[in-house]
Structure formats: structure tokens, C-alpha cells
Length: 476
Image (cartoon, rainbow, N blue to C red; front, side):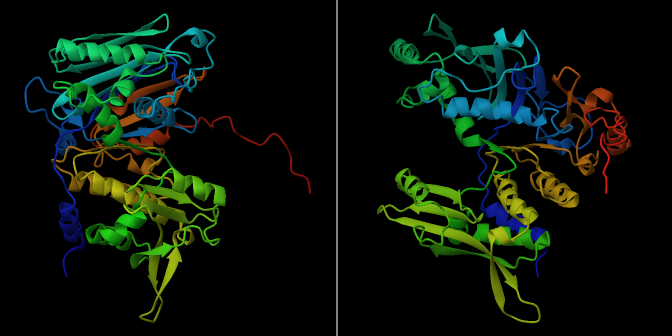
């Protein structure tokens, strides 16, 4: 019988599509949620020599080297999830826009009297198809005041476009964009029609501009946000697994390998076709109708019922609706018989694992960046550690990226992470969050950083020194 890890490698190779580099380089945030002054989260390597396979090297001397991973620590309410929210905010603003609204929904830093009148800023640098891009916005609740897209290398920046909103009208200028004057005027008209609360990157990509020769820096940047960047929150569910498992044997075998190796007690997975409109599907009829009405041909929607059973709904090419639910297979003791469990009958940890398995698989395709908030939620520390080990060991040379927040101290191990991959978010007495790397403390390679962290050496932990007794007494 083949080694289980070898089987996993064979199966994952069947699903692998090598297509390029798609990684985050840097994120800066200012006056957004708990970030008052500008903070920087950086994914370029320092001079650390350990774990060299965690670094994707640039092909030319002017190219940037980029880290494959980062893990972000912080106490509860320190602001580590706000870093993910800032990234998610920018993604949604690019991909969804504001739907014609005159209001941009977000929260400025609230504990500084001057922050209310100050503008906010989010800028993201990323690598896509051989090009480094810097995309940023300056905004408040009523307006996008500035928006810019540059390409760059170690030596020089190249302007693609800059947008400014002046007296309610959007003005745009172009730089290193190799398009005709006629096409440039066309883009200027699109900018003129762009709402003050709308991004030009969003507005232009919702027009028929893909046929314009030389437009790829704008369309590629939009595609990076829509297709490459995936953000997973603790409550996120992997969409469409019920249908994919049924039609993809390789995917099914990889899932079953994971669930067996991680000792979940599950011996297999099956999909069951259900009547979505049957009363046994515990979802209000109004909601069912809305889901079906908004479903295009070939599209899949995932919805959970009141009893936490998840359904995948598909509209076939003939317009008919199909619905499926996923069940797990368990072998009955002292018997060859099996029984089936609904997903909601499995533990929270098993359900969380099933949502993270596709992440490890996707990261083997070189076409995804995953940002996971609270990767350790409901998972045993050793299981989370093993997931990261699998990612690093099975993606050597693969140009994918995994970034996560956690407070699981078991992961603070210099055998698993480089010092420049470990980040902390700490909040001061004024409620302001700061962001900094373990590399700033320069711990020795043999240093037990987990113990140092728990003792408060790097801050970013709860301060419970003065919590001695409760302020009330329990009386019999």
C-alpha cells in the first residue's frame, strides 16, 4: 500500500495548474478601525537565513523577493482581525463597489478627536503575472479623494493611472499605459461617469474594456482582487464542495485522505440529492425563492438551514434547479456496515478542517493568496501545526501564499516559521493598534520564542497582572 503522503502528492498533482506568481508584498492602513497612524505589514524577507524555501526569489536583480507566509499574533481586541478587515474592505470596494450609494460604509479610528476629520487610506502592493503593482485609495464616508495604480521594481515606479475627485467630479491621468489616444479618451469618459464614492478600477472593469490593447495593467489588477485574493473568516464555508465532491474523484480522494490522516473517524464522503423546496429543508420559503431567483445558469449557491445543514444549489443549463447536501460515512464497530452523518453532527473541529482542506489544495496551484482569520478556530494546536507543515513541505517552489491570524502559541516555533514571517499586533492605552515583526527583536535561532511571547517579551498578549479577584462575592 502506498505511503499516505505520497498518495496525497500524487492526487494533488492532478489538480495542480502552474500559472504564475500572485503574492501580497505590502499592506499599509491608516485611520481605519483600530489603526490611527499609518501601519505597515510587509512580506519581503529580511536577512534571515533559515527556511530559505519560504522565500520566492525574484528572477532578476531588480525583482523583489517575497515571503510565502505570515502569521499574525495579538491579544483579543488587539486589532489583528482589523488588518484582515482592511484587506477585505479594499477587495469588496474593488469587486463589488458601493452599489450606487453616496456613502462608503466603514469605521474610522474613534478614540482620537482629530481622526473624524482626517481621511483614511489603504494601499496594497502585490505581484501578478511578473509585475509588481501598488494600488491605493484615500477616502472618507462621502468620497474617494485619491486612487492610484503603479507598477514598480527595486529601481523605479511607473504610473499607470492616478484619479482625483475634485468638486464631485472624477479626474484621471495616465502614465505607463500603452493605449491609443482614442482609447485614452474612452477611459476618461468612464472616469467622468464614475461616482465620487466609486473606484475607477471597479467602474472601468464593469465596462467592455478587455478588448483594448495595452489595458492589461488595469484588467489584471482587477482580476487579482476578484480571482486570486481569498479571505476566510471563522464562519466562512467552502462553497460548492457538495457538487464538486460528487463530480471529481481526485478531489474526493484527497478529502478522504485528509480526514483519515487527521483521525476524524470519517471513512468517506457522499453527496445526497435533495428536494430543495421540501419542508425537511429547514429554510424559510421566501429565502429559498430568493436564492433560486438570483441564481444564473451554471452558478452554485451555498446556504445553511436553521439546523446548520449546508446545501449547495445549482442551476443547470436547462434552467432546472438541483440541490445537494454532503454527508460523512462512518463504519459501525464490529461490522462491515456503514452509517451516514449530516455535517452538523460532526464536531466543530472536523467541520473547520473540511473548510481548510480546499485551501491547502488551492495553494498547490500557484494561483491563490489565502488570508485566514483565526486559522486555529476549533482545531487542536497539533492539527493546525500539521496543516502549516503540509503547506510548507508540499509547496516548495510553488508561488502561493498563506497568511493567517491566530493566538495559538504552539505555532511560535522557529523550526516552522522564519522570524520575518511572525508578526504581532498590539494595542496601546489609547486604543491604537501597532504592527511589528518578530525580526525587530532579533531573537537567536535557538531561542524559545513561545515562552518569550507568553512572558510578554514581545507584548501583544493580554495584560492580566492586576486581575486578582472578582469585584463581587458569591453568597450561598
